[in-house]
Image (cartoon, rainbow, N blue to C red; front, side, top):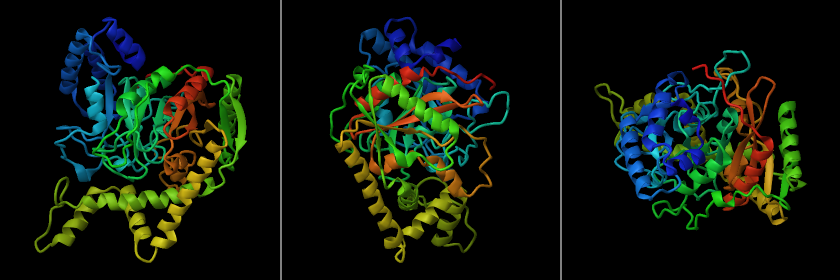
Amino acid sequence: MSELTKLTLAEARDKLRARDVSSLELTEACLSAIEGAGALNAFVHHTPEIARDQARAADARLAAGDAPAMCGLPIGVKDLFCTKGVPSQAASRILQGFLPEYESTVTSQLFDAGAVMLGKLNMDEFAMGSSNETSCYGNVVNPWRRGNDDTALTPGGSSGGSAAAVAADLCLAATGTDTGGSIRQPAAFTGIVGIKPTYGRCSRWGVVAFASSLDQAGPMTKTVRDAAIMLGAMCGHDPKDSTSADLPVPDFEAMLTGDIRGKVIGIPREYRMDGMPAEIEKLWADGTAMLKAAGAEIREISLPHTKYALPAYYVIAPAEASSNLARYDGVRYGHRAKLAQGDGITEMYEKTRAEGFGHEVQRRVMVGTYVLSAGFYDAYYNRARKVRALIKRDFDQVFDAGIDAILTPATPSAAFGLGEMQDADPVQMYLNDVFTVTVNLAGLPGIAVPAGMDAQGLPLGLQLIGRPWEEGDLLNTAYALEQAAGFVAKPGKWW
C-alpha cells in the first residue's frame, strides 16, 4: 500500500487513467501514511471524510472518461488557503476556530479539476518565518537527517509543512505560498521542487494575506513535470482578485521537451556572497556546467541593486503585514481575549492581539507600523519602494539583453537544526531569504530544483529565475537541469 504514496503526480495520473489503481486506494494509502507520521507534525487539520468523498467522485469521473490531469490525485493544502467548512487559521492563535464559508480560488480550481484534499498543512504563523518555528501548532520536522545524527532539522518556511509532507510521501503534492522564498527555500531544504509563478498568475483570493504585493501561490511537488501539471490547474484569471492576470494558461507539461539548446543562462555576480559555503559554490558551478552541457550559453550578468534587496524587502513586507493584520481585532471573527470589568475597546484590541499573535508576527507588525508612521514613511517605506523599482529594472534590462533564465543557489546552506537559530539576531534568520526575495520584489517566476547533497547527506537546491509570464520556458529549463542533476535521493524513514 505504501508504495502508492511514492508515486509522482504524473505516474499516479497515468495509473488512474489506465484503471490500474483507484483514487480511493491512493487516498487511503496517503491517509495511512499521514496517520503514521505524527512525529513530522506536517498535517494539522485532517479531512479524511472529505478526501474519501472527493476520491469517490474522482473515480466516477475517471470511469466516465472526464479526467483532467489532477483528477483523483491526493494533495495537502497549506493552512493559509481558506477551505470551506475546514479550519483555516494560518497557524495563528488569533484565527482559532475560524471556519470559512467560502473556498479560495486556488483550492476551488484544484477541486474542480478533481484533486483530493487530505488535510491542512502546518506553516509559519501568517507565513512569517524561514524555519517553521513560529507556528501555533508547534514545529514541523524535516524528514531528512544529517548522516547518523538524530538532530531534528527545519524543513524551511513558511511552507514547511507542505515541503515535509511531499518529501516524506504523505501526499503526492501540496500547495504553498511564497512571499520572499517560502516555496523555494523549503523545497531546497527537503529535496523537492517548488515553483513561485509570476505575480498575478495564481489568484490570491481566499489566501490569508501577509504582504499583498509579494504573496503568490504555487505548487510543491516531487518533480518538475508534476509542478507543470499542478501549476496548470492552479492558474487562471480571477475577477475576484484585482491583481490576477487575464492571460491564457498554456499547457505547461507539453512544453517540457528538455531541449535548451541556444538558451542563454545568466549567472549574476552579485549572488556570490562573502562567506558562501564551498558546497553551495560547487553546487552552483556544477549546475552551470550541466546547463552548458545541455546546450545553453552561459553568460555572466550584473544585478547591481541586489545588495539592497533584503533591507527593502524587510521594510515593504512588514509594512504590508501591519496593514493586512489590522483586521484581526477580536471584533468580527477569530480569537477575542477575556476582558476585565471596566475594560474598553482599546483594552480588547490590545489583549486580543497580544494573546493571538506570536512574537515574530508582533515584531513584524511593529516594524511595519513604524516604517509607515508619519515621521518615517519617506525615510523608510518610500525609499524601499524606489529600491524595489530599481531591482525590477535590473532584471528587465538583463532579460532585454537576451537572457532567458538566471541560475542562482536557492539557499545559503542546507537545512539547519530546529532551535539552532533561536538565540541568533533575527536578521541572521532573515538571511535565509537572501537568494529568493529579489524574485518577489520584481514579481518574477522562480523555481527551486534539487541538484545535489552536502557532506552530511542533506539535499541542496538550485534556483532558476525566468522572464515574467514565461513559466513554461522556465519549467523546461528546470526540467533539463533536473534530468542532468539526476537527484533521486529520499529521506530514510525514521518517523
